[in-house]
Image (tube, rainbow over all chains, first blue to last red; front, side):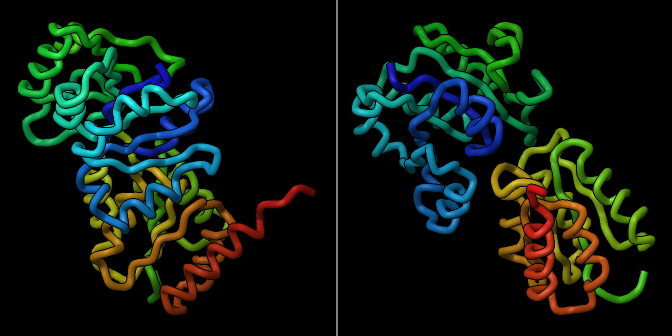
Length: 157
Length: 124
């Protein structure tokens, strides 16, 4: 399975992703799945600045991801799919399964969210969405870096 | 504090206040630089903190890395704030250069700081 991580992180491409996870996973590519970024040349340029040259950064919206997901999984290089929110990751899983595991890597405070971990804030709706994904076969854990212990979704209740 | 640009240092954890403190200690110039941490904040919260530090004044915002929440928050704010410039890879030499040249125009100050910061990276 060359998509080695499906990560929800509202910072998208940043140090924890490209260095913290990128090095041990020997990443070849990152798919940044976000409709807003996909439609903004300005934001795409900024994210390219933050990506080391040895990692290919691809941009996708949900429709493109639904078409390409199987092909990404069949590639020889290791890849990450990154979304900024739970809803986008849930939509990918619904549109183009499977997504075996979801990593909650950084979801920060917004109105309606409550703290579950220092780096994970969730609304009740987001929690229930993750719970539903898990009940239908996707394992959901929170883990900011590979050197820390994963935290089961149940512990974020 | 005399007239000139504001300087805002935006960085991970405790890095920003430490850089500001040491730049002030070396230069003897206080009250010009402000520190913003990313601690406990998402991008929107960090942008709010930067905006508060910039206070709509002509400013140079120094960010630690050219990626991540600090960088994006600063760039997003700069897009809608006249007279605000962003420089990444903040280090003490660039802050010291800023402190001593902050009466120049923002573009010139930012360009100088980037050159000074880069020039300080050597392998003796």
